[in-house]
Image 1 (tube, rainbow, N blue to C red):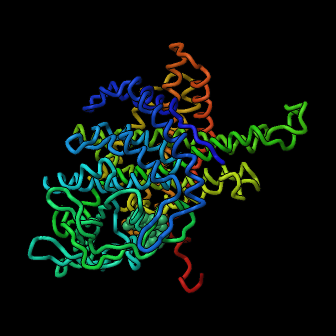
Image 2 (tube, protein in one colour):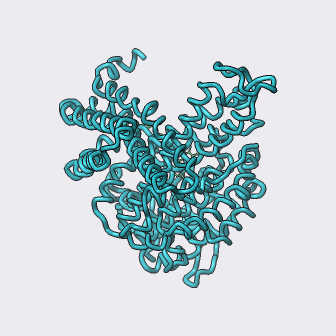
Image 3 (tube, rainbow, N blue to C red):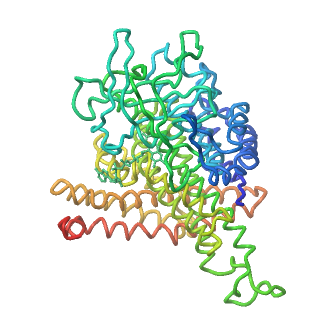
Length: 592
Ligand SMILES: Cc1cc2nc3c(=O)[nH]c(=O)nc-3n(C[C@H](O)[C@H](O)[C@H](O)COP(=O)(O)OP(=O)(O)OC[C@H]3O[C@@H](n4cnc5c(N)ncnc54)[C@H](O)[C@@H]3O)c2cc1C
């Protein structure tokens, strides 16, 4: 079965040598010195490797069971969830006022990668709770926060997000679930939600559902949607759990992956609910936590890719097939390990350069979320808003591709279940779909984010890359390997944006037909920037004679690979974008 080792050293390198967290002016970051984060990451890594990873295949094999309205999670999940609670891992970046530890989001993102890489389906129970916590924290009244948050921080009560219905997923304006106001100020929620992750399970004493619903008589479409807190069990003013509310699980879905997470049909039959935020402003309430939630899903892509890569690497060193084209390397053995073959190397380098580059990108995103929340930095807020669809769409698409590459390293042994490699591909697949399907992320990027605020965040991004290249030029080797390719890629991104500006007004199809390519073009530029920064940091460490030179040399070599072999994808994306919508839209629907 696959194993998982948390990439603590790499995480430390990004946090301290690249992002230089403890030198930052963001409130709370001064506490994050290397000793402190090192201790936390080591501990999180231990739980990930020793407790969660061994349950990953168990969850996949057993799945969840629905019996008489109760959902049973796979063997061992409940005990592991207790361990997470006892260790305080569920409230790491939650508000101390409600029992959290008040750590920056960037640290929770780092530990979150470990937990997710070890066991994505398991970690989702906690992830969904954190999403619901954030929504209540941002929009709840003081009384609501005091009532619900403390036990969500500890995950004694878990949370869910209920948006999707059979007839509406992306287009939530078609929602039918109703919320009827009652004289006592509560609402009666009636309707059916589908595909609700962690909707019902046996690991917590209560489940706090956040449900989008329409108040009768409100505005049509998406403007008439409000958000409600709907607990599985009612809770009195003293915090005591009381009667069962009118919400029940109708079914659990059979699905491709994340079998350990219960994906539920939830039926609301006049359930008691409490308005969260303002009437008809449900989508705004959801959007405030969108950056965080989407970054979390982007992280799933890269976390699973890292786990799959680690196992593919071990296998490539172990599996003997064929001889190195340049002469046998394992002369005493019957064949060489497959890692000698250039095509296996290409695959491993693709995986490694994505996982490490993606990690830096995701942590930079989390740092911007902290910067905007803790320091009220509007520029960081604009930038993370722009980059959120890129983080979500690019990291999950690539994460899945890399999990498939890792599976391919195993040949037929990757396709059968014995080695557990198909689980990585199957689990990674959902991240491309939920939390806004990736096609819709691309639409959001090109249709909204690019032009948001007069295009200021996009201009700031281009300017940032330009300044970085200018300030760090001068070393011929670094310029050629990193800065020149980065400049070219960034130029492609600007040309693509310009194409949309010049042609999108005339015919919006020209913009939207290129949106998916634009999201990937943008993702590559971001990883190109991350690799340039990492190479620069590694160069500095080598220059100061830091121990473990091999780590820094490997960093630079991996970065050179990304810049030479992956980044040129930007010209293909630009060529596709510049060809416009004509060939895309040429056929009548009837002629397909
Ligand atoms: C395992 C699992 C867990 C989930 N967990 C949750 C959960 O916890 N809570 C929850 O509320 N939901 C959840 N979902 C639902 C998920 O978020 C939706 O499936 C997703 O948002 C897409 O909606 P849909 O399936 O209705 O697809 P549709 O909206 O019907 O979209 C179908 C396709 O059309 C594309 N598309 C749609 N509109 C446009 C457009 N305007 N332009 C271009 N392309 C478009 C989409 O990209 C997609 O490829 C989960 C789903 C699964 C499978």
